[in-house]
Length: 377
Ligand SMILES: *Cc1c(COP(=O)(O)O)cnc(C)c1O
Image 1 (cartoon, rainbow, N blue to C red):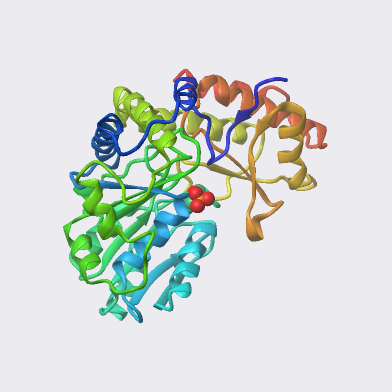
Image 2 (image 1 turned 120 degrees about the vertical axis):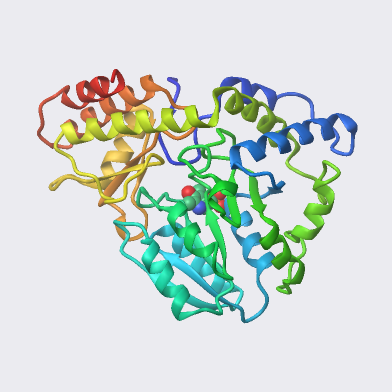
């Protein structure tokens, strides 16, 4: 069997040295040996999150970390603002509704991201809002939100800014402390190049204060317990020990590469993908397209569902299809995580072979050639 290639916005490819570390015997977590690994990982997480505050590790997928932000910041009936501009914005909406919060929804079309003025207006109309829930990279649509400008607004308002950076962290710039973002949430299986299973959350002083007075019910995701344990390099419950061991290896690699270099690499590879698909006559879905995932409109006359299926089953290259209303209308390619130029060229080659087979007409080789030119810039 040939090695499958993942060009999806999560889960992403895991480097071999990270994969290998999971095959070591299970360590006990209440030991100085594990605590040393935890301590190193916790320190390096702060670097990737660009914060001086602790980054809490949760054993859950990213959604568990999203939920923990809601239940640890809010109390019953609190007014909150959430942006709905894609599948993951929708998740904030569903979470706020699940906990019966007084929700103000900013609903925007999926082909763009929220404008800072829209947040400003919502805050002006709702000065009693406690939290604004947003998404850095809206993975379903390929849009990257201008969090820096939004944080300038929330920083001087009483409302806390919570950013879902599950697919954006370690991929596209997010400077938590410098920008004044109150809460950042992420997960293991995207930019961190790890298997799924860990959620991350960091809170600044303002947010930790809100946590102290939050009264929504919680138990497993009670972050007050997590903070207490974190200070002693441990967790309240049995953590995903093997993934934390892997996290430590992945973080060492990320730190060695350097956060700015990581952003530059994702940008270069994403540019090559964009140049490649455009050279084939294809168009991008999102007007605020970023470097986390590139959503491409399915050309007229082609069955969108078949592109992803054929690429995966015949060529062992996995792309992502569209979600919700975008099913069959877009496909998504991502250079997120452990992806290099060769993967991108292979990805373009696979798009060409797949589209040719599905009857789309274009000049063969043009996409690959544009990608190679872009990579050598
Ligand atoms: C992947 C992702 C999540 C979390 O999904 P899980 O399946 O729970 O890990 C949340 N938000 C965004 C933007 C994502 O891309």
